[in-house]
Image 1 (cartoon, helix red, strand yellow):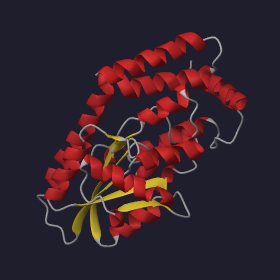
Image 2: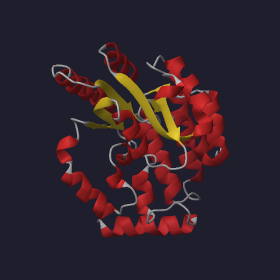
Image 3: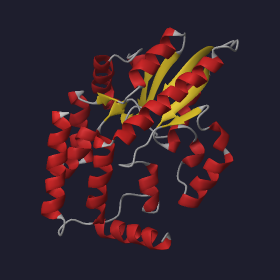
Image 4: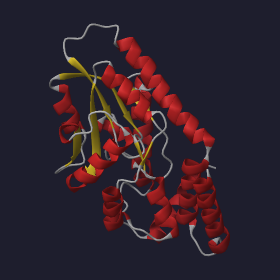
Length: 259
């Protein structure tokens, strides 16, 4: 609790000190990170996601399967909480490229509420657990260390499938499906579930969600993440490789078009 209060004080001070100088992107990052870090609502939503996952697993365990069951989870903001790194990007100016490598090596990520208990329950009931993440292959050591330290089951290299030549997770999901029945997938980003969400605009993503709406809360369990993800890149036209000024202009365009 003391650590949370200190973080809140630092970020509030940052808001007050630089309110006139920082842009819309920085302001939104401060508020989204504060929500993820300090709101009890976020914690409740995480528990809710994993409570639903347990209910769905219990239902499936009543069915006779010919293949061994598997549960696929994303890593960042699904089982590993990286808000401390996001705070460093705001307060200390840390950058994703380079500084995130050091964050992963530190293995300091905390467990998302409910994640450790659920995955151990699933493992104890005969499920294999696979961690499919778009962290780089060079992150395997830090990721493995972090998962082990937090008590996640099957924290071993063969069950951690990181990004190789492509960020397309479908290829790795198919590997698991070759000899497993995938009971459910858990993530914070729609590309954790289906490839149909890759490289789509806002309207296409809406339409795809509507088309598979019955899967959410059943085979797909999604956690909240207002800090980053495909949704954010979509706001910028599908790429983050534009200037800060261009990004801000696009954000204002979206705000004005939805008022």
